[in-house]
Image 1 (tube, one colour):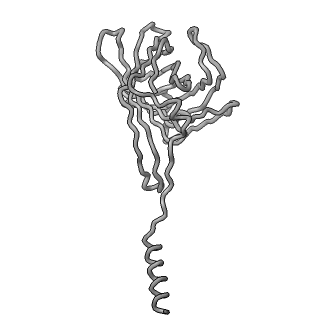
Image 2: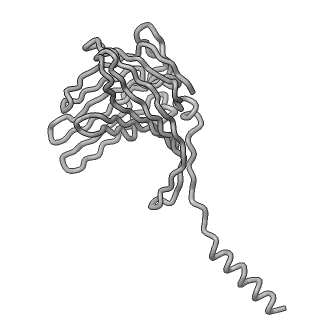
Length: 220
């Protein structure tokens, strides 16, 4: 009987030693996914209130998957939405690329196609937005580089070009190297619509635009 008990305890110890605790897994906030998971067929038409130029932004692909953070010991679901910006008014097929990425309750935004390679607005903003308004500010400095972002305002409703949009957050992003501004941008973002207005100031790329949403088609 003692041998049986010993073998049973030994087996349990071996099994317990071989069993690794499961790592945390983070899913995407359901309300974020419901409000911003744009699919191919989605497009936005903007007009620059400074130059009068019209550009179109269209979702090309939407990808989802799971990644593992080995150093942090967790895994998370992610969604990547790839968008192309076209320049129909220029008469060329040139385009630039934008990318949304979602995980947890965070929205990140990337912009490609500039002289500074890419602009990474991360974290861009969380969803649901905080209301009543709570200022969320981050700023970090590496050497002579200062990267900052903050939520400037949250509107219950916001009017633009005769349209009324509900629950609009205004987000500021800036990157300063030494005393030179790489970019200083402001975005107005709305659930189930996307970005309805963006002020882009990129001196290194000679970009100074105020894109305002003219019309759109959203596929979720």
